[in-house]
Length: 149
View 1: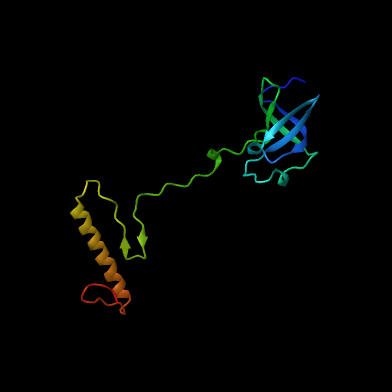
View 2: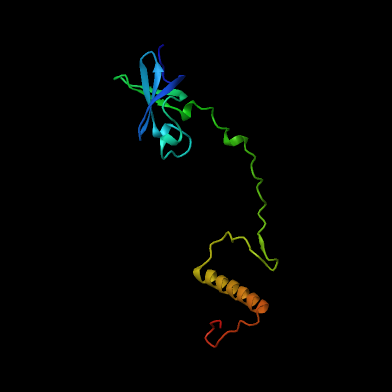
């Protein structure tokens, strides 16, 4: 049997190391599956996935000039469904979200603002929020320096 790159064949695991597994392909040929090619998930210990003697399908990744055969188990598996088949979320219109019904976020202005304008807007928004909190919680009072008690 002549092996070609891209071919998917069955083999038997003959050895397990911490960096991969060795697979007997028959007719005196064997190859290695690197730990990164064992599964689609992170593999900490290969022994959690396979044991010696397991039959596996492998894909031939490379055949070196020295006769070494690089194999992959995860690439021999059936492909996952492409992301295009997943239902897509609908795009929301650009309405600002409402927070507890009393405050709505306004979209950013398109024209550039000066630093002073941004600070004034921040101060105004902050004062409005604090007034709302104070109105809902009368126990919050301000001291002469402006800190909440």
